[in-house]
Each structure stands twice: as C-alpha cells, then as structure tokens.
Image (tube, rainbow, N blue to C red; front, side, top):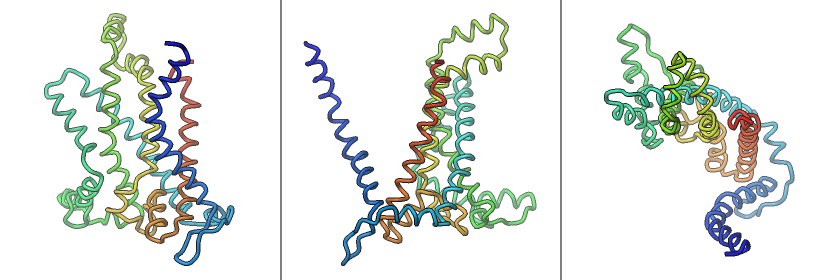
Length: 291
C-alpha cells in the first residue's frame, strides 16, 4: 500500500467521528457565536445584527457577575476536594483489604445515580426540621437551620453534593492508573528503606500526574456545567446565592426566551473554559511528561 493510500485510509477512518464532531460541536459553536451578535427574533420581528450590544449588556449585568463569582467559588471549593478525596479512596481500595470490592462499589455508586435523583436525595437531607441532617443535629440539641434557604450555607450545600457525586467517578481513573504501576517500584523502595509516605510523594504522585491532568480538566468542566442540582434544590436562590453560569444561561434562554443574550453568555462560558483548559495544558504539560 502506497503512502497516499495509507493517508487516505487513515482519513476515511477518521471521517465519521470528524463529521459527528463538526456537526454537533463545531457547527453549533460557530452558529452560537454568530447569534450572539444578533438580536433575539420575535414573532413579528426577525433578528437583526446588533454588533457587540449583547456583550455591552453583559458587562453591565450584575447577575452575570454574581453568577460568575459564585461559579468561581464553587469551582475552588469542589475541584480540590473532589480530586483529593478521589485519590485517597483510590489508594485505599487499591490495597489488599477484605471486602475491597464492596468498598469500590460503595464509592462508585453515587456516580451512576441520575443527577436529579441525587439532588432529591440531598434535598431530603437538607430539609428543615425533619430532614436527616436536622434530625442528627437535633439529637445534640442544636436549633433548626434552613440550609438551602440561607445565603451563607446554600452554595456550600451544593458543593457537598457535587463532591459526594464526583469523587467516586474520579477515583476510577486513579485506581486504573495505580493498577498499571509495577509492584517492583514499591519493593525496591522498601529495600532502600523508604517510608510509605516518601514513596507516595516521590514516586506515586509523579507517576499519577497524567491522570491528574485528565481529572483536573474534567473537574473544571463539571464545575461550570452544573444545572440539574440547582434546578431541583435552590433555583438559584436565595437572593442569587446559588446562581451559577449554566443555570443563568438556562434561565435566560428558556425562562425569559432571550436566545441572543443566552448565546452571548454561552460564548463567554466557552471562552472561559477554553482558556482554563489551555492554561492547564500549558503550565502542567512539562510536569506531566517531565520535559
């Protein structure tokens, strides 16, 4: 087979996936970008080109800035905890334990539950007066607290739910990476007198860096695409305390029927996620591949 035939054969193999990617990812992104420069079409008025008017409106939108700040706090609270807990669970269930299969199943179970089901479970936990959390606190004489109705605790409650659900998912990737490591490394370190903590810090963690980069990128994306829990548990309240970017886009697009402004918000969110992903690959690439 000639070189040209090999090249053509490779591109033909890639064509179905490339076509699906272009049709369902790239084309919608381009059309959304174009729509962000237009007005929202109405029943008797088609959309018209308005330039950067939607972006100027966004810059003066206090709810957008509130949602962005909430999302940044949400990401800062959930990403490190999810990754650290996932790594801890993976190391724990990777050892020779009795019933480790049950432990792996228990840690992974929250991942397979539907988002709406998880939100309803935790909604019961946080219910004032008779919720599970309130029953536990009441046993110690604590007064009732409206966890999801307080500006000081509502966002934190959503963070707990996200960490509980995502840590098991990230654990699977760390567990797979740990099982690919040669046991000879631990044996050689033990012969040299290295402690388990020193081996974990100097050998295990560096070898897990490619997995950590993959998990980190996914954790960032997950932190900015949460909408299910917000719809079920808080609807952005109280007083926009849990208003996150994707939920705000959902409200603008489907509740207020302002598709042009929703497209503008979507482009800003895509730009933010793309910038963060590029920064992660740019700064962590050398540490991951030891260049």
